[in-house]
Image (cartoon, rainbow, N blue to C red; front, side):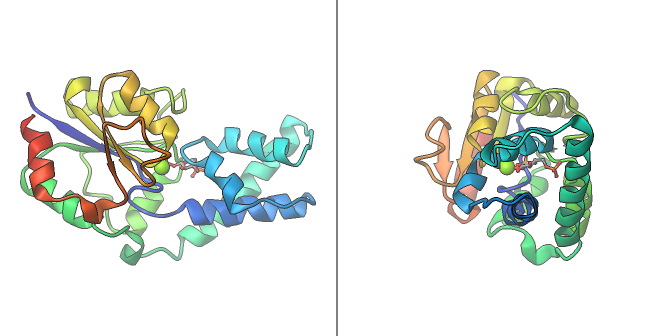
Length: 217
Ligand code: B16
Ligand code: MG
């Protein structure tokens, strides 16, 4: 059957996790506590609103919804200031080669990201026109590990879930793909992403033979 490929954004196509980290760290410091890179691991693939709740738990801070909304805005403003400086040099190694290969074979491709900033990021790095559909944090009600972002993507590509192949760097994203029987490919530490069907440290490890196997499975 016809296959479709779905790509997460942050941590798969671009490494924006560092920018999220800097912006959350600024907020933590402003509130009087430290926020480490290790703690930032828990924020991967998690929505903006949930991320703030985790941060406030770390700092043991209670706040009104009104105050939280203000912090969400200021965090995002700082994050956007880093995004503005991105170029195509910020695309992770090996990604373009994979995307171009699939494109040359006319394979349908979707973006499936929790980020509400996915569109401006794709424009900055010159990949906005690469995908047949972009499903992001503005389109979904339920966050990963709920599979909604990927099921909408597969539906829009016109492929059944078991014919969808998902590239993800977060545990929540791998679980989301597995829960609807999509093929899950973990990008990152195989120890952390051991629930994935296939594991690679990055896209430089993925070759056309492997992609052909997925396409023809
Ligand atoms: P934003 P992904 C996720 O992107 C990030 O991994 C996560 O750290 C972030 O909190 C979330 O997007 C929301 O991002 O604040 O830009 O809406 O990995 O699903 O592409
Ligand atoms: Mg990610």
